[in-house]
Image 1 (tube, one colour):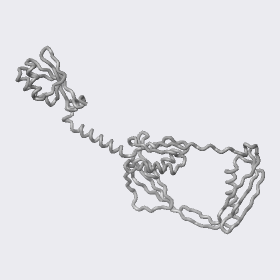
Image 2 (image 1 turned 135 degrees about the horizontal axis):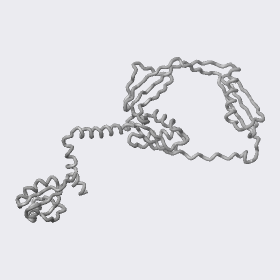
Image 3 (image 1 turned 90 degrees about the vertical axis):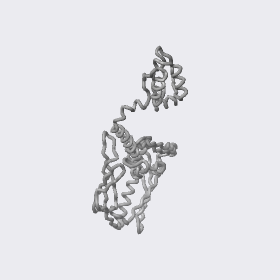
Length: 323
């Protein structure tokens, strides 16, 4: 610690020559001037003292028939002295520190690690919807809330933590260990033929959606500040947004254009007759068969169709075996 303060305040190594050394040292002690590392030489002695006290030594040395001379200078004051008349450099250094501090108060990039079942795109898309993306200020990000929201949205996540590494938001994810699949008792018993049941329903009332028009709006994004580039804005029935950021050497800067796409749709309701609703139910049954009975061969099936006032239901019992 003493060395640190000596460096901050500065000190000099000097030599005393041609006088009475004992009287010089005695008077320095009386005046409270601290001399360090004193050693005798052929012409007198040499020692070191604080830079601010060195000027006092000239008068004391002259009073005792000698003189002092600086051998070497040490410390911060002597290092900074050449910069004394370079105000522009000092202002530039201060401005540089302020700019770096300002840029580090924004999120420049979002990095996701530790995920395997859920893609980076899905995680980043969810974070963007919750205001964690390039260009937002760190002070506006509630990291604890976002971690809980991610674990609630993605059931495979057991633990999430968002670390702040300068201007990078590092999302660290730990996923749950999947439960082992239950043993196939039928296969273990050697029974290759068994039954399966499927049930689907199709409703008579159907709604058709038609897109009437699409309008695009743009906003200029600058470090989290969004400036609309339009005058009149009308919310659509379906909204979609995307942001294109300026990139330098593959790093996205918090400067770009946000594109809002508003779609205006028209809904039409129609009621299906018996033939149409039955056909729709059979299409759903076919899709369910492809999904649920994949890997099985259908030996026989028993089908029941029920037509009600609002829907058509189909229940099927299959006799199947493994392929």
